[in-house]
Length: 341
Image (cartoon, rainbow, N blue to C red; front, side):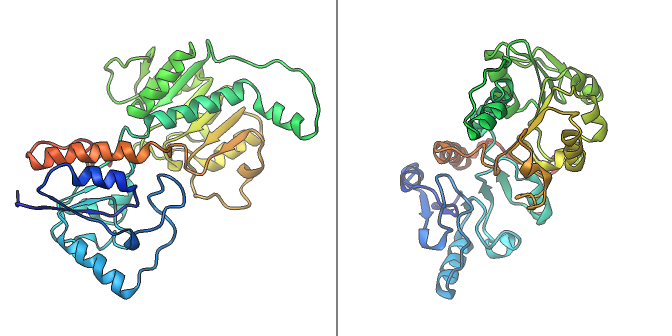
């Protein structure tokens, strides 16, 4: 370990979080210049507004990258050429959990750079989104919104979540938090995962071969799996046909998990009661996508995981990993470049 550990902050985060990183250990040299980073459009925005550095600013940023052994998030404008512009880089901490496909797409899976993710940070807000969506469909928010627009007061009968079956594809940290919400609402919770080890708050586990059996029982289907070759298109025409006409699909994983055209057909033909989509095949979906105009579809602009506490929680992981890195200990949330999660 060199005497000074050079850490570049490449994401727009608040000053108090940068001060926490600086104060962690006197051997850490933190490089941070907000002028060289995208300007956040909202709290916890790591992509920021489109950035155009001046030649002088670009030279300064490249000089920082050339010195960095550790980088906090992917540097804007230098992802594909990261090994060339940051030859000393050994470890990059991402602000996202699902970086596997991107790392592979740009060829960084073939490098010696270690990547750690923000896995776990987004579990609660994503689970909250699922609970919100389930309650909106159970309480028939579509009816309320329709009548409000025409100023009509007409009583109706809704549902409750108690006794309903919540099926979760992907019982990782996010899926487990979704399951916890489901049990709080007295739901029956089932889930699909690789391991058959018992999971708190999950009443019954299914393996991949039993997916169709799980789908037949579902009142709400939550997709919380990462995008891998095994999960791509896991919910297609045949799987959608197994769901009850009263079932609702909630996708907080990745758009590639679902055959979107088949989903649209199922919704149009009333073979599915509704969908809540935080992720889609194309983001944003094209203007002529039928999903925009469907009253029984909730569309979130890939923002269900974004909350005001996000940067603090990511900084917690980064600081813990920095201590581990300096002590020669294994890091948390290391990306498996083969499994892509």
